[in-house]
Length: 264
Image (spheres, rainbow, N blue to C red):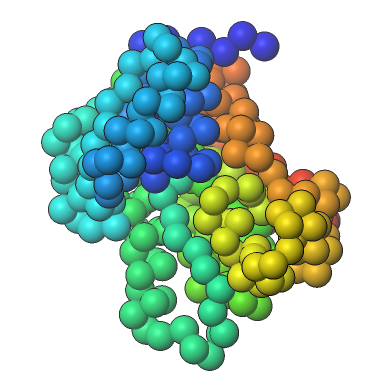
């Protein structure tokens, strides 16, 4: 399959590292102009260098802003007023005993993982529908459906993204714009490595820690390993393509079989 996104502008939130950077690199490889976002200028500059190292001809723009705030969204919109592809990847996660989660933490997870996506969809979607083409993808998680006991606040935010995606897909019905969510299983990033060691102990070598984590905390996985960011990027690039024109309002899974027979 030859995916050509030449002439398209793709905004990828939370893209200074990990899944977001892998997605941006994949989109750039398909010819899209990519916009990297994050709060730290230095990390964004490093991410842009990494992306150009993988895709030397890439057209890359970096915008340092805090998209968990209205001000951050306004800064992004001022710099990039129109987009053809919007990938809402920005998110935070962490473990917490359920009864210890404070009101402030609930609000922070909602503002960062959900409202940041809603703000950008609300602003970019009208232009997409006017032009008759666009792709919106919200990066959700298997935690949206099988809520981890140690991450209820995170799971709540990812469940909300499924509703957000389905609702905005209905708003865009018949316009040539698709809106989908990507249900990602446990993925190998630096932050997840820290999370895994937090749960299984910091003294184990990484390969053993990963296997222990999957066996004890994510036993439903058919892969029995963490997904690599590039594997999620492959699906996102496809959903961003003209070839995915008939897929909208869907929760598309790249979860390693983690969600067994449970479909949203």
